[in-house]
Length: 186
Image (cartoon, rainbow, N blue to C red; front, side):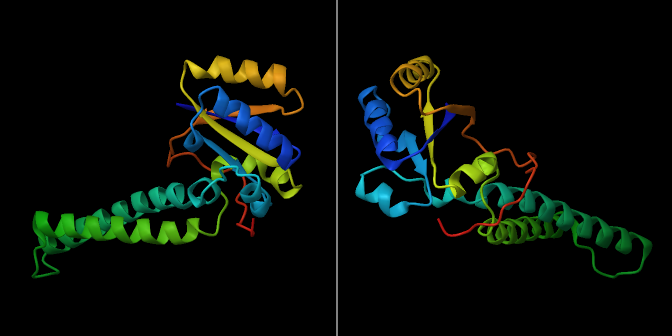
């Protein structure tokens, strides 16, 4: 699955695009529209983007979970080293190492998720100015077979709705956001 991004100027055009894509066989759950005008999306029966699309929860949680795991394992290595030198009388062993790594992982994921709640999703940062200007970001998840059909439909029937790029649906915790926008009310 690939995600294709288009930007519409009005809710009426976004509704027409959504109806045309549904007619092409794109399921409702494969089409998301992000806008500051949530009420307009609702009244026009357009499937709006959910918080996972809007906020950087999963990406930041994954990054912090990895850091937490590494911190827990580093602490375990330091404790094992201190035991071997004779500074401690407590040997944490394999179980203690796993517990410290797991605690670090969970704490990092929790902390990252909390931070991610205040950040805009790193995948839509390039559309920040468009969304703030009142435009409608249309995100369409398509299979390899649907991709040329969707592009052809959009090029011929909606030339006023520009294609703004594509990407994967998945999250890569190693991707670094270029700019961090803090979430405003949309």
